Image (tube, rainbow, N blue to C red; front, side, top):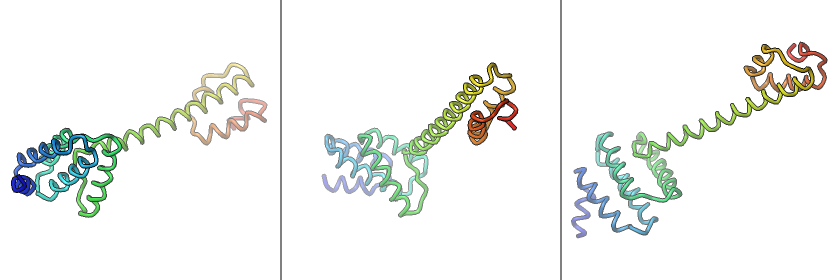
Length: 170
């Protein structure tokens, strides 16, 4: 059995990789830490075996499914793979393409929050202007809604001292 595992570990046959992953999935069932070590080892081996990029991605999708990890350990695996990749100086080609997706989602959330804050500032300024000057012309509403953060802040400060709308936007 040990010789069989050794042969599977050293094979460049994609089916050997799948069989090895399946055996490891059974062996590590119920032991997430052992599964993490095994999954990392399998992934490193794929890099070193000279598989084509498309083959690596397909094999990793299957390995990812067979050797599923809890989210915290999945993040640890991602960190280990990033370090490994830096060591061997090659592009990060794994089924962890979701890392880029996660980063994109974080950037999107940050951008959405900034837009929400910008919209909230504009809305607050329009309320202050309406309270002080009454009904506002459409041009003022349009200008406020299209303003930068800096402009909104400046105009909001001027609300306290301005006697007319013209003084605010001067």
